[in-house]
Image (cartoon, rainbow, N blue to C red; front, side):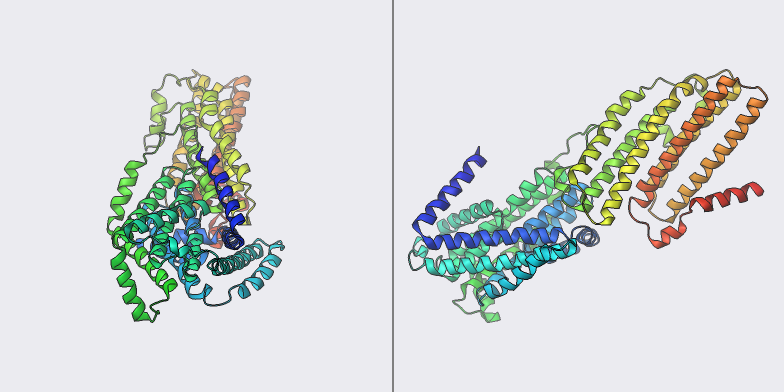
Length: 602
């Protein structure tokens, strides 16, 4: 209901403002151009999130000081704490970051956002900024027409900066002209009532514009034109800081619990920081005066003093909150308790991760691991074992010897409920995302989709295998009993081996383990074919039995190949291009054949 009323209300207010004052149109146009510049800048940086930013983020957040530094530097470069917050929420939702590291980034982003005030107050208002805007717009728009994503990204950044500068110019011009008709300074409110009033105005303006930078620039330009009092401008800056959390909150609505926790941390931090700034505002104003005198800022240069104040209260907020960061994380963990997700429901495929290549890819990888986890239950049940036994070091041959029969297992129901639905969600997510990125992410998604298909194909082959497996695994014919026992035990042992590979470090030993499995598979197939030929020749099994066994050996071989291929993508390569060293270690088909021939000759 509120959303339906908000837009028409804003439109009416703007229309009324345009009617009573032409200068208001200039200010509003400046704000609009500035916001469009912010959007262009964000689009430009998104063009470089196809690996570079994500790699830096993952490598730069293993310690708190690194997380803080990343937040400061990335926000200073992108001039958007909101974008940094949304990207961080995406990484949290995809499982690429922990909450502790994410909170550190948010703290750093609040410090980084202060650079915008310094740029506008120290540079934007001191020179004719529109002179820099025009060349940036010309070169930026030219680059937007290029086919290269990198050049387009640079084009968005240049045009974004151009629009930012142009917006600042029009806001400045508008306020300069506005004071000749209406002096807004007459509406100044002194004392704490003024602080709370203008803080609320700052929050509202930021919520509407979805940009604390826009509110801050508007405040600085109005302050430079003498349209608002210095004290009220400080309150607007505090309000802008609190209001910027709305973007993170909106971004977290489509995220999982981790994303919601980070948005909560952002809100708590900015609320506490804003409250401290309001309570101690007069002491901080005295500190700002002292700092300004030390660094050579003039007593009447209120725009630069505002930049000093903005930096000071954000730094103070970080210093106050840092000792409590672990308690904050613990509190948020308890506040947002994860909902119990059924095996058939996706856990990582949220809208918050879909916009960024690495987060979307990692979400698909994590969801594929859940498909594999569900497949372990199904395969173990069909082969007649408990999951816990398959994944332990228990001798499965001994368990098989004690079984009088294999318990009935509904493959169709388990597949439909726990695998098919989840696989369908993954395919839908990939289609919805588009994945029109650079080769690295496209290749990863291709192989992850292939890994899902490998699992599905293995399950379908298992369904074909099940009928005869249930009959001959308890057969009175010793040869058929031994053959089918060997098939189900060896396939269960393959699952055990794949899980061990998944749990061990991603190094060359994993590659060797898979090569070993490939050799074992070929050896088993060869031995089985020789045994089958000898058994048929000696008439130890009937022709019907031989036909069934040959078909089922083919199914078992297909299951084996599909699961090994799945493990190769999901547990070793993880969908990424192997490094040259890893390529050298991995055995190709010719090398595997050569090793088999050497083994036969020994």
